[in-house]
Length: 313
Image (cartoon, rainbow, N blue to C red):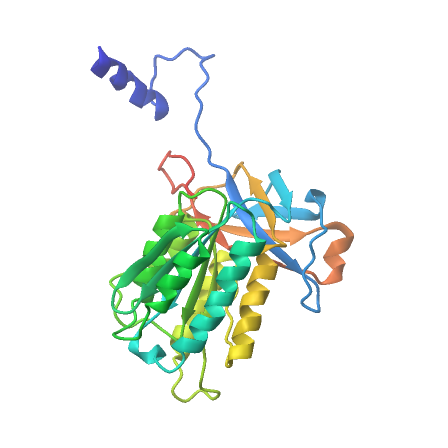
């Protein structure tokens, strides 16, 4: 009897049961798509006082009804902090870790009591140094054990960190502290970006640049990180001194505390061949003329043509 019941259940979900009565209602699960949104004025100052009616959301060019709106969201943060410990970071890693330590302390002391951080290091391999915790002493102890050696598996780190973040409660953030591009990953750029977008995270790459001119810098790696940041609604930082690095982490904290949470249930959105849906959030009404800059992730992975499934993240 159990097998027979399952046999009839599967066609019902796939909308392929000809014997159904005409008044039968078939429900298809639709996932809430949500975005963390940052708004700045022409001078780069954060704007944190807008209302739901000030925003418009477009999915594959189709305007959507906003179902969830939170200003300066109080949802807890899960922050995956990825620290590059490859051999090329040897000269700078001490002052990098000093700034990271200040960032961790500020986030733990001043944030939501449910905020949590995980610390990963990556060289030729990716190592979880500390699982998600609010204990600064545990994170600090793990930081003190880090040393520089080996290659750089940047994309592997992003991929694995994203997979761990995907099902955690609240807002998802990844901070990547590195000095350049990837050299030893099994995963590629596109796999890392898709994993990041599936986990709804905002990525802040911090590219530490001890070299002021282009000679000797990994420009290709920096461009890839900038694209990853833009695709998730974050932004890339390129500090060249300890003071600039401290200010970078202060800027990240400030943005995290002034984000809007916007969510909607996709409606009348045409499916795509590659499952990727483009997202756009704008301000409307009188605000549209004020040159405000709205930043959020640029898409998500949902239904493909003919899939008949529910929307992905």
